[in-house]
Image 1 (cartoon, rainbow, N blue to C red):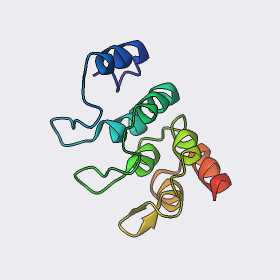
Image 2 (cartoon, one colour):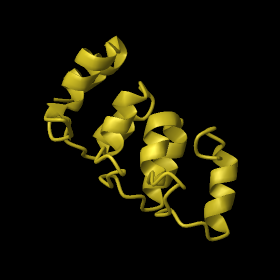
Image 3 (tube, helix red, strand yellow):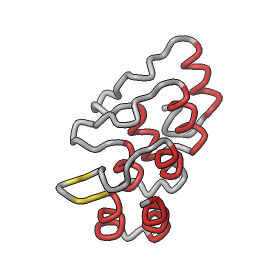
Image 4 (cartoon, one colour):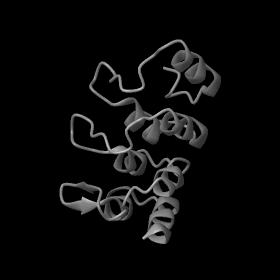
Length: 118
């Protein structure tokens, strides 16, 4: 998929010919959540500029910021935070994104990004 591979030109082309930014993958993932977990900052910025939902949950209830934390995608976290995603308000099993990053994943760079955004 163009989003997963951070193929910016392909994502632009697909959106320009009418691909829905609100479409879900076959597994039920919103495109923005998938981008937050696996794509470049440029792809995340593009999707948000084209009105992707920054707070749309996936089938498990995870929103894009939590998906970025789970995927250790430090490129998209600052994009989401700049767009106003509350760092403390995103929860998984009662835990904030910061706690999930520190406790479950041990991603030091992501912890630093989230702590600075608090």
